[in-house]
Image 1 (cartoon, rainbow, N blue to C red):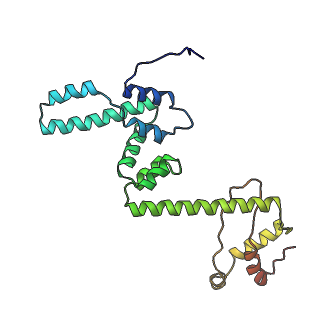
Image 2 (image 1 turned 90 degrees about the vertical axis):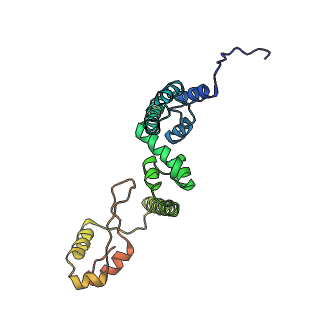
Image 3 (image 1 turned 30 degrees about the vertical axis):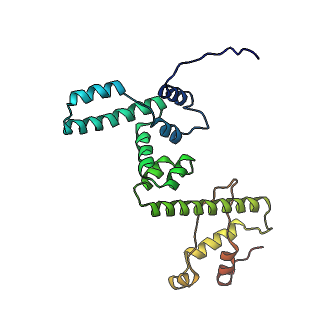
Length: 218
């Protein structure tokens, strides 16, 4: 094509960035963290800022108050442009200023929430790295557990555990004498986020309980 009909907008870099952020506020590829991060480059209140600096007359105390006021005004304006809360703007600013690079990247990629990343940013870099490591391990374990339970739900091992069996097992666990309970060890009850109405009991619990209460599983 020799000619393309289009609209051309004359924009400064700051105006172009403002337009870009405004148009992509709800675009899936740009989450709140990324948009707030981009908005840090916006030059806000430049004319008003110069006027207030002149009024301050170079006085140190007045200048300090002015800077604090400017930070608040900047957060409000950025929050308005982005359509996010002023609190999240403050949190992202703190993350970018104080958090470790691993925490910052995890928040940017939505691996952790802005709120959690901001809390971590108040800890040492070593602690932040450890927090992320533990979180990933825990999520990995939960994912493996869900996959395992899903496979069991599709391919049961043939054991039939009736309501009567379950009642006898729970009764035996709850009425076990203290000295026997200590030797038996702890029994953990938990909730599994899997589809269907099911109750799962581990083979280890059945084998450990069977010699003492003669619970039969057919």
